[in-house]
Length: 139
Image 1 (tube, helix red, strand yellow):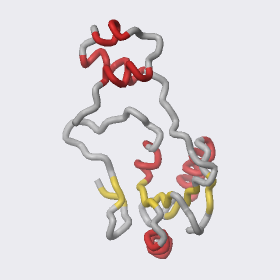
Image 2 (cartoon, one colour; image 1 turned 135 degrees about the vertical axis):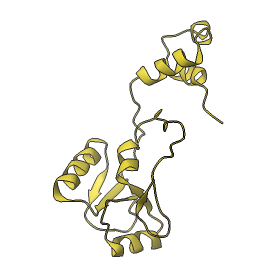
Image 3 (cartoon, helix red, strand yellow; image 1 turned 90 degrees about the vertical axis):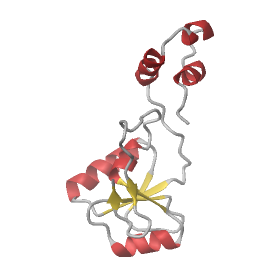
Image 4 (cartoon, helix red, strand yellow; image 1 turned 30 degrees about the vertical axis):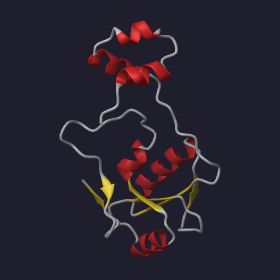
């Protein structure tokens, strides 16, 4: 079931009345939803992320993004690691250890989109994910 843009606006656009929201077409409502400032998901202070399989410059950029969004960045799979973000050449031992302790494995695209509250894939397109068996990003 697709989300209703009118319901999103009623919850998020406090400057609009119910009548104004209900008078919008679905397209206009979605346009307004996408124009709203992006909301950041609140992170627990214990939210940790580790990056594996990235080149130096890519990893540096991802670490900067993580720091800006309140993550605690670690260099190895530590106890209670929240997220292991896997690049093109992830370390197999990191993946194995992360899976064993129930850490969430995500791709770079998933990490970058983590805070895009209302982002939807284009029609016929699926979001990327990390393959449960291989731990590698797939489309």
